[in-house]
Image (cartoon, rainbow, N blue to C red; front, side, top):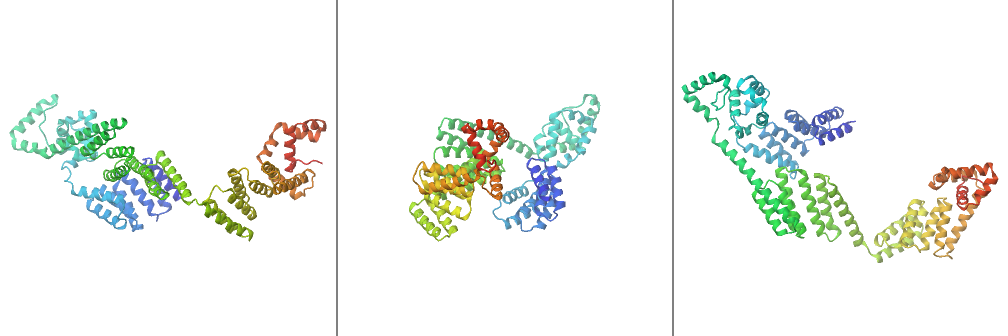
Length: 571
């Protein structure tokens, strides 16, 4: 039951329904309160909902239950980071890395926590915008109440609530300045005013004039550093736009197969703006087309590393890994070369399960298997193994014989003799389905090899499929009409079929043959055929009509099939 609730929680988490995920993980915890993974998962769900206090509680419980589990410290660090406990976050991530030094999530989290700890202090006015009290104050004040009907103003205030440091971006907007004054209970001089309260504003302006020192102090709210941040944001946007133009020119050159020009533009884009790994993966694609596989692999590794630093879309990281796998596959010469190819594709699939990547993985695994068979191919050793198998067969050591025949097949999978001999062993061991499969493979490899037909017929005979065995023996006689083994097989089948026709079967044999016959799809089709049902009825009730039916070869063959299987008995 706990596993079922956990599975539901995982599914809800994957779909972005974090509230439901918390509910399911809580149900699982109630059923299995010592399972550290459940607390870890619920901590992640709480963190996704920005409920960092609850996430911290679950993370602490995770570490308590499993102190040597690195992922628990990753959850603990994330919760502390969400609560702005930067020192504690650094400590948690560092402890996790002591357990698993190569854990990428811990490395990334530690880097984020370290950067945040080194970052400048938050905006001093941030607290004024927190909580629902902000909206209550803005609604109550006549000077800001009208602003709440303006969508762009509401969006600005919501953004400032989410990220108080973004206040600096909006201070030039007089509405924001007016709102800040209301929230801080401080009056700022603004250009806009409410005409209906003109007299009051004039009085206030006069008051401000009478207190110049206060006015000057209030105007210091907008420091120089805020302007620098705005400039930096604008420059970043301009660099990104310029880099995207370089990328577009690179794409156009790539489509024209002007690969050198494409590389030039993608490289320029990377130098201008290094926060978009698509520039790197695109350049890797050009190297791949040019057959420069080592360069392609270097770019893909760089894209993965940079993507993890930037926390880029997992699909982009998966694309880089898939491209790397393709380049490694192009360089593969022997089966062992496909091991890193397969490993890279598997890593890509853990990032994003893309059908194209899955197809490439299957192709790589198939290519590796084919090369292994080619490298293992050695007819001489195959003959030696077959002879060893023959010796064990003579000594009636059939399992050992099967082992050597199997090795002979691996060494030379085109030799029908090894399949024929192994089929004989399986028959001796009573493994009829395996024996039948080997006999059919033997016939497939060499349709003129009479041993294949005798092996298959023998298996069918032992399975009491006498009609099928008869057909197999007769097919073999078309290629070797004097083969005594095939002739003996036909004779044995005729004896068994006639025995059924004469009604000489014992009750046990009849019951067994009927049960086996009813499992035959052909018998089932005959019995469900309306025409044959009428024929069977005439055989019992209308002998004259039955005689006419028996003159039809097709009906006669079907009746014979039913007689051989014991379903119909002639007296």
